[in-house]
Image 1 (cartoon, rainbow, N blue to C red):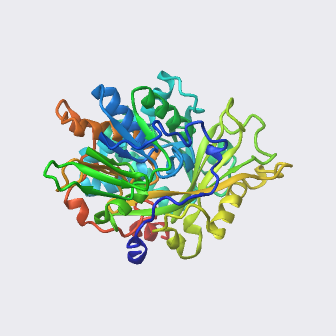
Image 2: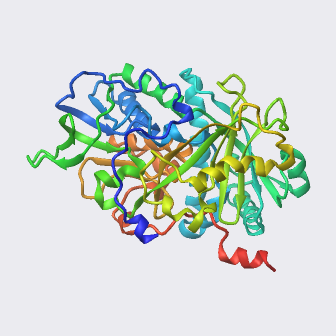
Image 3: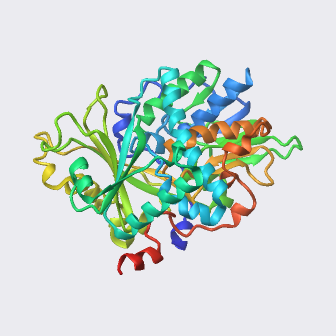
Length: 473
């Protein structure tokens, strides 16, 4: 892993795999608010995914008239946000025991509540602003096949109920035994399952809708304009200059909303924020599945990994389609070679095959025959960002006045990014009083200490050794 983590990311590459969500592209895809790049701005936001769009919107909404320039290397929302699996799902119980051990009960509870509030906030914003993004809220289920994972899940849920309280919304999980799991969720071979509230959304439609709102408030969006470097001007004014192929722009403040690509612009986070390529497929459901469609979203959890799957809700384009992603740990070397790459123009053939086949395998005989038009509608890849401690890095970069970061969302951007962007703008405005630390996790904040922790792998996924041994007894 050390070798993979040390690989320097590239800029986002041209001609990435075609994402289901971006077909057809929105009218903002190649938008440039002004034909020429401005020479200066108050704030430059680099990246037009959910983090960048949310930061820009919040600055303009809370600050009033201010010049905000957004630089996007490719098309609008063409990175991880526009290439994800569409899940708004936290699964907070899966990291809860580790968070209690490493950060204490208060912080662990704060993280769990923040994740749930992040899901609620994104769907509520879509409703309030009438963003048509196939927003669906309902239930999800984690189908568990590994004994160690099943033991750990139950232990974590009981611990959450004890610490947060039985009535706390963030502790609402239901456990199902093997027989109930098979009957209710149409799968075979599981030891049990966990159900709880979650949702799904077209993140691409949500973000382009958010960008439209920001543009109405004065955002200058410049697509096809990669940030090549960030440097201080050296003029003693503490201003920043961002170089692009179309010229340079000065700004008082710069926000890196660049997730897995961040180390390209700011090399000190190389080995701290590490890219991971994910693979996703949109599939037509098998003819044996309920004609009315599935009623929950899913995750399928085994000893060293998981897959996640949503169904496309009624009223959406291709309603009933299944969007499934994951499978990297099923590849040779548990997919080690997917770490450190920022190449979303291609996909690993082994992982691609696993993704194509996994849903039918999980449902077994309940899947039935494939759709006459074929199982796969589209398959693609995207680049996520992971940190050494398993949390985002949010705040001002240490010893870099007014260089800000919100990145490394651990594959959970639709849960974490929206509220994190609000928190970052609060920090930028110096408004951290009034209970800020009661809701925003301290563990997410950027600090010098966090730059000392090198990356060793994705956390909270494998069965811990003590539970592996226990499950074999």
